[in-house]
Image 1: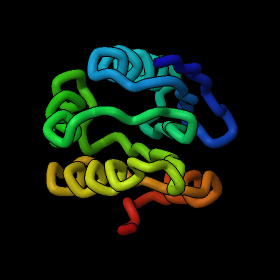
Image 2: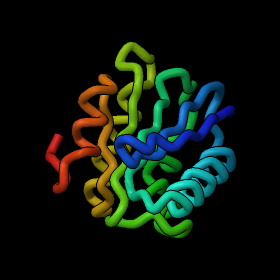
Image 3: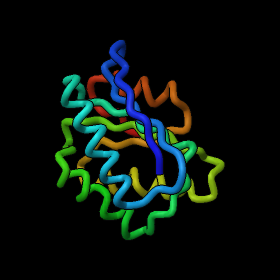
Length: 129
């Protein structure tokens, strides 16, 4: 899995573009780097573009993602918009992850359109999807 992290000063959003095949360990390292970038810039908003990512995490791993995010320091004070490709054969994994996140009280939401994702990040209160 590859990723590139940038900070959008205009919107105060840390964005990351991913590609390749996701692994649990790579996802954890990437998330730690994104969190460090956010802290450096005083941001609590992330835009994660997984549209070029090949998802191969198991259902159990997806179910455990919120716990991993909490362990590295991502809590309800952060807002994470995730872009996915709805044409991907495993796009339902993203919906499942969003539901698991909501149950875990983490404001992670999935979107297929970047403009919608950015608008959600710019709102003060988390919007229901």
